[in-house]
Each structure stands twice: as structure tokens, then as C-alpha cells.
Image (cartoon, rainbow over all chains, first blue to last red; front, side):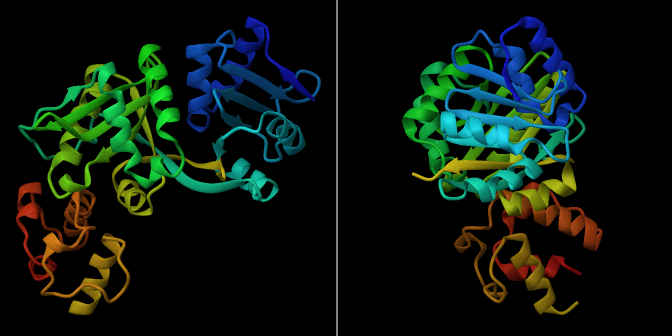
Length: 266
Length: 72
């Protein structure tokens, strides 16, 4: 049975459920903490019988996040919501996305990646004089151009969608971007796309193709994680779908979970 | 280790197809020779060859042969 959350006490109950396994449901947890169910862009449901939670389904804007601690989540309940709302993106842990994939493959394509945790001890030992800075709201269109040049974003978002999401996250203090400029142009970017007081999820690490043989990637990365992990004492996580990046990061950082996405075929 | 095996390791590191790297290749011509490859090489040299090399030293490498010379 699917129940939409409407009361604050229900939210508390769901947050307790999620917190037991937070590394596997970071996005739902953070969005629910930050936005709550009164946000017009948020809808949250639980599936389960007699008060027990089998799975949690969250809709934020046009994307779904799904989480379950059960080895056999109630796929029919989840599919019912997918059919009703036709989300552009469906994300969740690899097992649940793998279960949904064959049932949604006509309309969605899948991709899988890994969520890593990074600590303040795990900075690259490569000091640099290059200046990094937090970006302003007005920089968002230029940041989006850079992000869309990367397959990881270009294949899944339109310019309009991504600008809207970044502006929303900037205004709600849910995310912020750090950049490197070259002659005023943004050529390197990394961001938090979701944050609470003690957790940050990083994403959008992109260097302009012209500058990929420079030290900008690790300079920006060092500066950014130093700020998040050491200065602000937050637990930092990031998601990667690139096979080459994952091979490298497995040697450097802590693997938290395997994660998957289904994106509507356009 | 034979040169062929070392080249194979470098091809894996840059996610290139087997057999497409050659000792005389200029690194500046290889798109995949980027900052991720730099870091991956630093770790490969540390783990497999017990050698420490800085980011500046990696960026100063010119050819695939320069890397092969470090892999011993």
C-alpha cells in the first residue's frame, strides 16, 4: 500500500528509517531534511503494510529517488507511482534500479556508478598557487554550459532544466559551486548539489577540455574538499559514473554504495 | 616486465583500446592523457614500482617512452 506523507510525525518516522542506512539514501535524506513535505516541488510516499516501511519514494521537481532496506522492495507500488507521474529521472541504489530497469526499458535508459566518501585526510598531495573561488548566482548559465559539455550531464539534462535546478539549489543554500577562471572564463568547476549542516554531496566536477592536461582538476578538488571536510567538518560524498574515474577513486576513497539511474529516453 | 605489458597497463589507465599506444607517441597528442591519467600514473608508480613522483614531474613527461622508463 502506498501512503503519501502529509504529517510532520510521518516525516520524522521516515527520517529515522533512512538514518539507519544513511550512506545508501543520501539524496532522499538530505532533500527531505532540507525541503520537507511542504515544499511545492516535493512529494514523498512510503510503501508498506500496517505501518511498516518497505520503501520510500520521493519526487523532487521531475525526478524520483527510491530507497528500500528490503531485499524485495514492493516494485508494483513503485511502478504505479512511476506510471502516474512519468518522472524524467529515477535514481536509487543499484539493486532497486536493476529491478526496475527491465520493467521500464522501453521508456528509460540506465546508467550505474559508485558513491564514494572522501575525508580531510584524502586530499591530493599537490600544492598549487592557482586561485579557486566560490561562484555567484550570476555565474550559473556559464557553469551550465561547462557541465553540458560533459556527457554525464549533456546526455541527461537540457540547459533550461539544469539552470533551473542549480538556481533552485543556490537560492535554497542546498548547493554551491567552486570554480577556476582563465582570463575571466570559467574553465573548472566542482559543486555541492545537496548539503545539510553535517553532510555534503559533491558533483559536477568538470574541467574545460582545453585545460584537462593542467593541474586544475586536483587543485580545484583539493581546495573544495579542504573547505568542506576540514574547515566546515562535513562528511563529503560524491557520485561517479565514469569507469576510468571509478577505477582511480576506488584506490583513493571509501566506496559507500553502488547507485543507478534511469533517464527517460527523449 | 616486457614493454608490451607496460603499454597494456598504460592503455588500461587511460581507458584506451589494446595496441593503440606506442613508445614514440607524444603525450600531448593523446586526449586521455589528462589530470585523471596523471593521478592514476602517480598511484600506479607508487603501488607497482615503489616510486614517488610529483604532479609537476608527471605533467613534464613528453612521450609514452618517458613513462615506460619510469616503470622499472
